[in-house]
Image 1 (cartoon, chains in turn yellow, purple):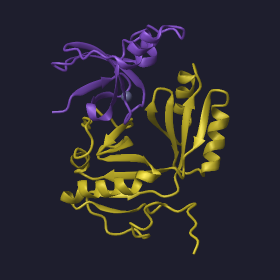
Image 2: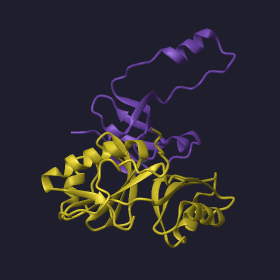
Image 3: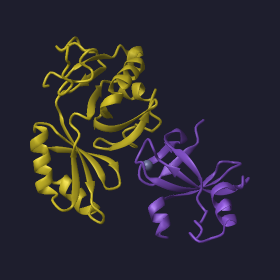
Image 4: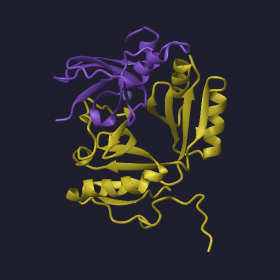
Length: 186
Length: 92
Ligand SMILES: [Zn+2]
């Protein structure tokens, strides 16, 4: 028997394919998001940051000085890569990561208390504002953490760590009956 | 309580996010330098009690190399500088 691993989500065996019943605190896994790494060429850091800020539909996550993750809400990986290449030609290196990263969206009133079990940084809104993002350690796994709302965070993790992070997040959320499913919009 | 390091790029982080490489004050000898000098550089390390300059890499964060000046006895941190900036002699 042969298995095709391409386009196969790493949590397909762990989550029902249809959306289930949501608890107040919920872990949602969007499938098929277009994600790209953007690395500024030497001396072009400010120009690339400005270009990304003006890129509209793309959400931009800070990784390191001169390095970001760009996530598109609606484009395919090919379109995202082409748009970024046109926008940042001669200023940045762009790599498709759509199959290399997995996105988790954690939301609900207890979300900060859940994350506090694995993340060592202050997530109060005065210290980690909406729109902020950074690489942090969650348990023993390095993730890119972003605050997408008052009570909503997104974690982006390397594909091979996704199952392990999923288990950790469920254990962290068990106290609050955290529910989990794939996002309805795909 | 975890020791906290203020990464110039990521903010205050627990020490668990870092990997420590050791003495940041060593200067690489000339390629033609004596075996003695190379032996000193590669193998011999002081183990000071007090102020110490170290290379720390923020592996779980921005992955940048940092130069951390701290006290090995009290773990008070005096300064944290990006490694590239420190090498250029420009401190932030
Ligand atoms: Zn850092």
